[in-house]
Amino acid sequence: MGLVVQKYGGSSVADAEGIKRVAKRIVEAKKNGHQVVAVVSAMGDTTDELIDLAEQVSPIPAGRELDMLLTAGERISMALLAMAIKNLGHSAQSFTGSQAGVITDSVHNKARIIDVTPGRIRDSLNEGNIAIVAGFQGVSQDTKDITTLGRGGSDTTAVALAAALDAEVCEIYTDVDGVFTADPRVVKKARKIDWISSEDMLELAASGSKVLLHRCVEYARRYNIPIHVRSSFSGLRGTWVSNEKPEGDAQVEHAIISGVAHDVSEAKVTVVGVPDKPGEAAAIFRTISDAEINIDMIVQNVSAAATGLTDISFTLPKTEGRKAIDALEKSKAGIGFESLRYDDQIGKISLVGAGMKTNPGVTADFFTALSDAGVNIELISTSEIRISVVTRADDVNEAVRAVHTAFGLDSDSDEAVVYGGTGR
Ligand code: ADP
Ligand code: ASP
Ligand code: MG
Image (cartoon, protein in one colour):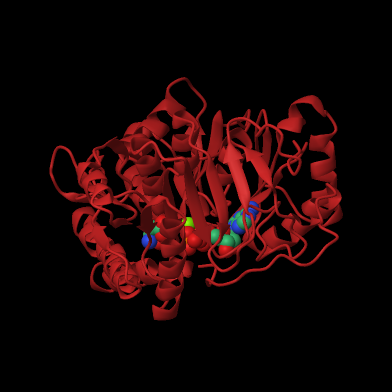
């Protein structure tokens, strides 16, 4: 029996009862002969509550201090979980990200892991302990300050530790029974997927299916770590995510369309009246990248013949909206645009599946489903295995359901179960 890394999300450890339930589950794995490392998130919506609190004292909290504050959430749950395990008669030790050897760059609030040196975790396991690790956090190699990995980052902690410790599997425990063909909170008839390729999962995650963070899937793909996404509330088999289809597993099939993802966490910035000449887009996006903001979709309109001016729109996380507007305003004279527009009432719907490459009708069917549902499309972007559109935020849920039905993804068995969480 090898080593397993298990990750428990905030909804699985939302209260004392949840922590005791998770403790039992971890002890079960240990009793089955595994060495167990459990990565844990902050309880319930603690991270959101801490962010709200920070914003009450400062509208744009300093990155370093925000990281200090947020990492406290995971410290609470790791210590409580270790206590609960000891109460069951087993030995456990908790570790912060820094103690566990999660080394990152120094970009606060969205640091990237650059190395994992889990010496203390190995020692603790070899002494017979269960090791509990605070997710979502690390320590900067340069500044030695505490960093966080971005929202949902405990998934990445788990996979990174699984890779560094050469684990058999990384189990991600959450509040639904696995990865579904759409968010079960929006589509009651969503179907559980038994196996999904890393490639398709990466696109779903990047398109907003927050059941797994895309950086975690990226990491797992690079180090070839199989992920098993499952519920901490049921004993059911969940969804396996891996590079190759598991051999001889009768339950898995390679679907043409893997699923529909949606995302209402983005906003749209339109730069109005940009001179249509070389170098303008470069100047705009240099300004944005110098502010360390990641953007998603971009569209440039055809310029009006009379004025020679065009508009450029792009989408970005709402949380970066203010920073982007400030940065562009500061460079306005240099870039030479007329004005800026900001719209945070948008949503994105994406259809994902490797089968798209070889099925030319998919795009047309997608747009037909949206038009039948009366949904207006504002932006479009595609990759080889994904089509995404931006619509009004109010239309998103209806659009997801319409597309899900149109592609025959609706399940004809029981409704998908959501065991906990607030969906925040
Ligand atoms: P955790 O607290 O365990 O990290 P998250 O809230 O981050 O949980 O992720 C689980 C949630 O992801 C589910 O409750 C569900 O609402 C949402 N979700 C979005 N898309 C999907 C999908 N395709 N399959 C399963 N869950 C999804
Ligand atoms: N607690 C952090 C968050 O809410 C990290 C995580 O849950 O993965 O984003
Ligand atoms: Mg999560």
